[in-house]
Length: 217
Length: 378
Figure 1 (cartoon, chains in turn green, orange):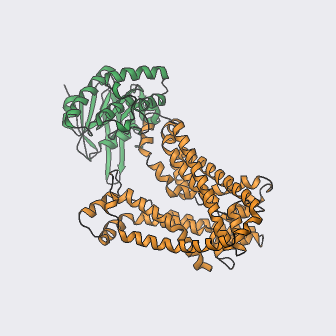
Figure 2: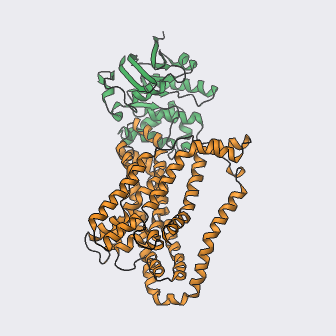
Figure 3: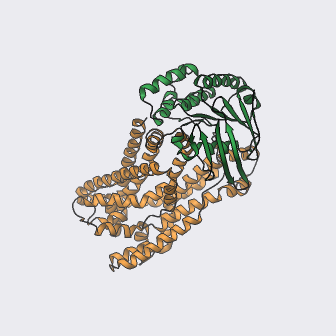
């Protein structure tokens, strides 16, 4: 387990108030809740894109990630909007993350080959991301997050832009990759089907507070 | 012509720029709402009162502030059409230094001027409103009477210009006396324009590199260009002014004076549009250099070239900076000003073709520089 403690942040009339929260260090922890419950705020606070209270800590295998700078936390991130770099090809997008993590070029290409296989990306690696379909873009974003061999993979509503059929296919794809790579994953979603298909643990958030936290057997 | 002439000249010069900026603001911020309002049968008056004004008032205030800052610190126009003495603070600063050699009073005036603009900048809050990526078809909303208004206003300017040109053609033989100087000054204008363009391009890239640091953005928002006269005289007393030195000092001084305007004219928007990509790159662990080289540079270099091109055109047509820093006419703009001072307005108008050509060449070259950088960095 990794332990998040004292995650507080006030946004005027709305606040995130989590005194203690356990995230699985194997499998998928789902942060679930309706729109406006504060899921994305928690997501951004964990990544370090927003600053939380001074005594916030995130203990992961003996390291306090909260005290580290954003790049040092070594997190793999997929945002709801995917945010691929539009001027680069799919492969260049993934390579960028490898460079950011200072992975050697040789190793990076090796990893891309493996990821292309498991995420079925071979057919469009050399295409500009601006011409890719929603499903293809999503796979590139996941590969980009995984290539840096992150401590934790964080996914913010990664299926929300896809149609129903593609969502189910993507869930299967992501589940296989996560299991194969054995990367602890935090999935932020409001879709009950994501919970049903992927979750090993579900944390329910409402009005910025955890109201339910349970493991799925 | 006094204050009235200055206001008229500033209005005529800035009218086009303001029109383009408002059009771009409308398209980017409320374009989709305009389209929707048209479909819903909303009249133009209703749209202006209930959509345009409430959403855009902050942006219009900022635009007004930008034009105010440009005109308030403007030096060239008051100098030539102002008449009398001390028409504006900028001219007063110029006179304090040039005529009375009174640097202390000039510095106090310049500080007052900068503080005044800085205080107004602080009052302005950044614009709000909506924005959308949906493509908007503006052709169906266009109004014919708008074209008539624009054409009429343009005609007023163009009419005076053509009258000057006719006069100029009548005196064309007088150009033979100064043809050698004209060739050199044409090259001088190109040299000044290109150096200003390249320096501005470099400055814009430096701004982009430092932009993600919060303190730097705050500094830029509050950055007020120093007084033109004071800045130029400071460069004048610093080192020698012979040989090629004016060609070094003029671009540096001009760059210092115009970089704040370039930033507010839209460079801040170009950088802010990439905020989410910078955020993603940071969360992936990328450092500032990698983000700049692989994410920012390929996407901003071309636009940077265009902005630098605008600065180059600006520099080609400006004589106020070079008039202080150079001991003789080095550029076509200075020659034109000399001709205007001796009331040879027709010849000066005819010479403006040369200025347009210089500006065009510099703009195209700077656009090329931007394109090369954006391609090389991919």
